[in-house]
Image (cartoon, rainbow, N blue to C red; front, top):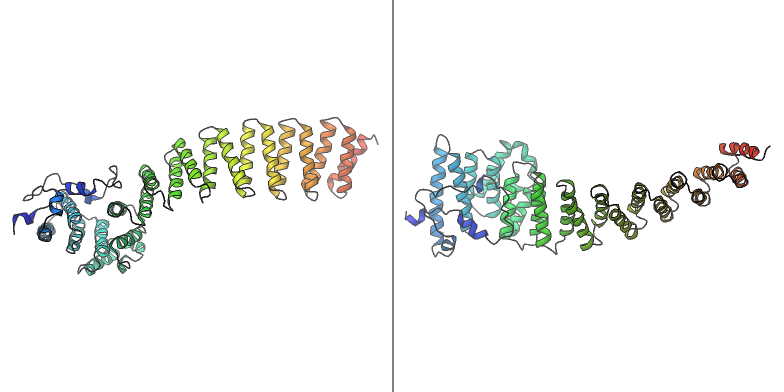
Length: 457
């Protein structure tokens, strides 16, 4: 065998291939396969990737390196105990090989060797990932049957509990294009909800994005990647990935949801409240009619109030809701929230106004009656504005004459005239109105006694 055929290329090749890809994040840890050899293997030499990529005898070089890898893997399989560090280096070299010679069909065997290496260090999820990649990258390879058999063996053995995640991997590919097959694989891998698989799945996301950044589904792969980080509770990485999606795929249909989810992470997981409200505002600005716009207004209002202590901004967002979504249940909640905020500021006039606006917008609803009752209570209890209280209560009497609240409202009006305003004549008039309208009600009996007392009878 020629000396140059024994070359095993260093990871500098990966750096050259991916140097200009915006999707490889330096902060992200990879699976064991990404470990970089501390020193070159004996008998190897350093060679820039461009030299290999442009070499006229690429296939010969690939075959030579494949042969060398076979020998090294066989040595480790036959050893009494595999050298874990050495195996990890060999795994790294299989990845370098794939980056150099992926288009050659003989690369399928390298994936099979990679699976064997993972098996040697008992990384069963890595074995599964390598075999899966073989099936989808090289569906016509003679090694596909071995890969399928290997996966089925894992699902009946060491990975038996994970067989439920297999939604079609062992059934093979249904797509024809290389990129489309790869995307199909990633969609199927997404089903594997287990922390042990996630590093390998994330590595596939990175590779897909490096190879096919302009694929129609690249934005979806980024979303899968963010969801993977969320699954691992790596919230900073998830936030970074959503931001990446929003920045590099401005026309994506997933962008609005990505920005919204980014805001949710800022608020709930990272407690970056300023960033959270800014991001919610971005949703509202960029997607005024989007499906997450209403929730962005609502969430921003809560953050302004509870976290940033800015009730003015909170009320502005609530006003946006009642303006943009009139008669929507969200507006009902916005009015209620607004009233509470005004009460907390001791701005009782605005609190009453908010409740009365609610009653106007949702006239005929139970919520409108409750709002008027609450409004009257604020007017009398907090504001001591009994004229305002009476006006609000008369709305209940006039707009809801057949409800129990109308009877109570009349009784309260009469009591207010008598006890707060010292106007016995008006009190008697209202008590009589109560008796006339609701003669059988228990309050009518009490009203008669009050009338008799006020008239000196």
